[in-house]
Every structure is written in C-alpha cells, then in structure tokens.
Image (cartoon, rainbow, N blue to C red; front, side):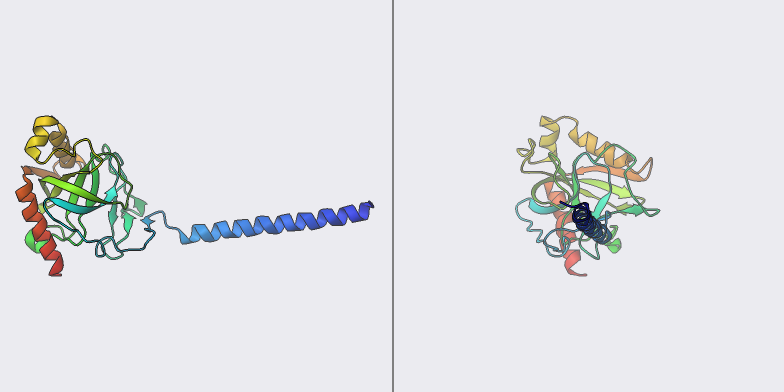
Length: 226
C-alpha cells in the first residue's frame, strides 16, 4: 500500500475521531447546562406539596423526605415549584453546622401552619425515625407524637413518626419510646434545640398522638383555606 493512501486513510480516521470527541463534549456541555445542583427534579415531575395526598388516617400519614437521616445538607420542598431544593445562604447551599439530622426530616403535603395561627407559613414538619430514606421519597409513616418547638417566637413543631422499615416500628407513643428505647426522645429534643445555635430554638417538650393529630388536622384545614 502506497504511503499516500496510508496518509489519506489516517487523515480520514483522525477526522472521524475528532468529530466523535467534539460531539461527545457538546453533549456533555448541554447536559451540564440544563442541570441544577440546587434542585432535585423528581422523575414524574409531580408537585410534592400539592399533588401528594397526605392520606392521614388512624395515625398514619404520607410524608415527603427532604433530608435523609444522618445528613446535614438543608434541602426542602419549594412552595412555588413543589420540587426539593437545596436552601441557599449567600448563594451557597446551606449545610447545618451541627451533627447530621437524627431522623429522616421532611414535611406533610397539603399542610400549612400560617403566621396568623402562630406558625411560620411552611408545611408541617415531620421526623421519621428509621434508616436513611432517599431525598424525595414519599413514606407511609406512623405518628407517635409531636415535639413542640419555637423558632424565634414562631411555632416550628415537629411531628415524630416511625418508618415501616425501622426497628422502632412497634412503638406507638412517645411514652413507649421512652420506656423501650431510652434516650431517643432526649436526643431529638437536644438536637432540635441546638442545631441553629444557642437560644434560637426553644423546646416545650413532647405531646402525645392526640396532640399531634390536633396540630396536623389544623395544618390540613389551613392549607385548604389558602
């Protein structure tokens, strides 16, 4: 084979390889430009606040996980888009300056505790005790009580629940939790009283399932009145 023919074949292969590389890089750039590390788009594109039925019945409720247990990045469902977004402080994703969350932290869809009723205007929060659940997961949780908290004077109560895959799933109340799993409720109270720094959060202790139900029903009613 002549050297001229060999050079032509080499030139063609090089050109094809270069086109392949440029095409691959172009696809990569387009993919990066359409992604946003501060927002997690769920595959079905449903609104996690308005499209999920809380289906609250007999102490069980659907909860949306925003922050998996043990992690410290502060994600939350955006009230406008209904997608889980990373909260930003000074244009940087917020990371809690404390130990990771002691349970799967999230909210109850179609709820609201408005400022007129002493709340903060956000959906009702819930802590689902158990192994880490993926962000954006909807879990059928069993409520066992409520932790009463004030955040700079505003109600910031947290429902306390257990996940179906949790070794605590046999627990039905805060009293039973304290009896069988000593220290867990104290860990929750200490954590939420201090994760924002000293004196920002004030705990007024725990309420039972009946108290939790009253707050949840109020939050469901207030959402429907919006």
